[in-house]
Image (cartoon, rainbow, N blue to C red; front, top):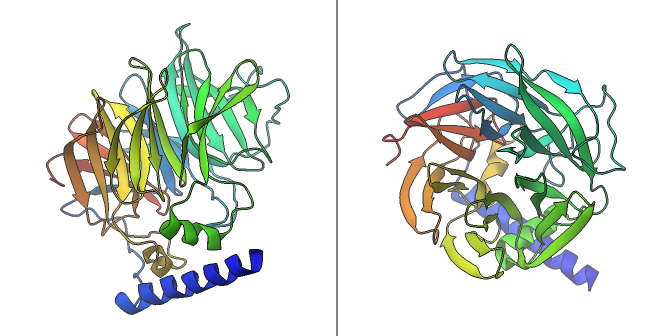
Length: 360
């Protein structure tokens, strides 16, 4: 059976690669400079700024600079940084090592151990403190916990971690106000590139949402199973959960109390989701699975994407902003703020700012 699967997967890979190159010959030229265009104002000197969060004073973006994720690319360390929205300047996060207050009892970190940030989430806890959770792939699979503090500027104090090495392979995380979290388990760690491409066609279940609580308990929410669970956001007020299924080509709204599906929105390869201004903001990729292959080793992969504003009630479409992305990498997250959408990317050296009227 494994051999048959391997043969089928190999054929699919060959067909996919052939279709990508035949239909759209040539590769993307590397982007020169750090130039704005009619769509996007860009700010450079980042490393794959995959996810974003906004500080409570509305002045800084917290940026997860993505190191990599197998089987797509080699695992590498990344970093956390801050971007000053008003001054348009970037700085590395000042991280202090604190007590293991918010993580599991068996998870430790040395001050010299690097991070591999991916998805992140920031909430104000019931006790008034600000908690940041970050999925990290390097050097092992963890969810890292930080307290965001203001001390002549924003700093991060490490407050513990949750070790999921060999158990789960998380993509994104969403906190509740007690410090528990929901995370998307994408697929098993041994998942291959062949199976990834297979699932782009088959759309079979590869993972689900996992809930962790402070008792070190994991609860797999079987009713959320789907093809490559990706971005996730907890609607604290309504006790609803929004989950993006990247290879399933849909965003789904779940009721956490009844476990029922409340709404779904179909779109190609949804990535991250942010709840802000009374809506869900979902970024999706407007390209085929073979298109990123044309980017090769380029720092930026300029592929089209959209940011969709969806209703929190049933995920019906409110507005859609579409970007050709000629001067940055493909978007993974869209964070609305003060008349703009701030955009990150898993394959770029820049973040971007778009006015809301640009992509309509």
